[in-house]
Every structure is written in C-alpha cells, then in structure tokens.
Length: 87
Image (cartoon, rainbow, N blue to C red):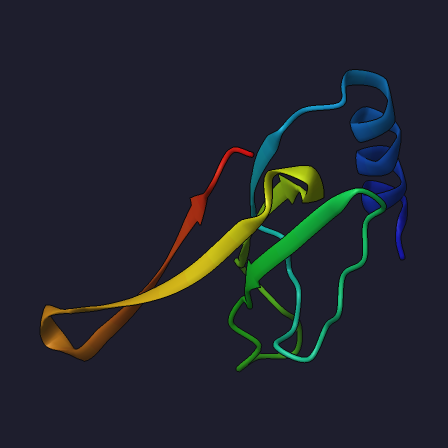
C-alpha cells in the first residue's frame, strides 16, 4: 500500500467519518482493499495503458451495514449504487 493509502488511514482514524467518497483511486479490478472499521466498494480505473488511471471508491463505516445494489441504465451502462441502512 502506498503513502496515499497510509495517509487515508491516518485521516480515517483522526476524523472517524461515516462515509468517504474517493476518485482517481488508480485501483485495478482485482485489488482487495481492507480498511479497519470500513466496508470498501470500488470501481476500478482504466488499465488499458501502461498504468491505471481513474477509479472510484466508497468507504462506509462497517457499523452502518451497507448494502450494494445494481441498477441498469440506458445504453447498457451499469451503475453501482450503494444504500447505507442506519441501524
């Protein structure tokens, strides 16, 4: 894990947010991200070139019990929409 993820861990421990949205994560499809006390949902970046570009991630505090649902949109695009159910 590189220094950006280490800095993210520090921010999570300091501010303890319920939800965090990230962009330009540069994660590949087979990357498994584990962050203590958070469920991590990510959409991989484009790795068609020599490096990965783009990518998004949603971090949801595990105590919120997040659920993932799939929505189909026009033009055969898939959007991952996450619903957090407060306990």
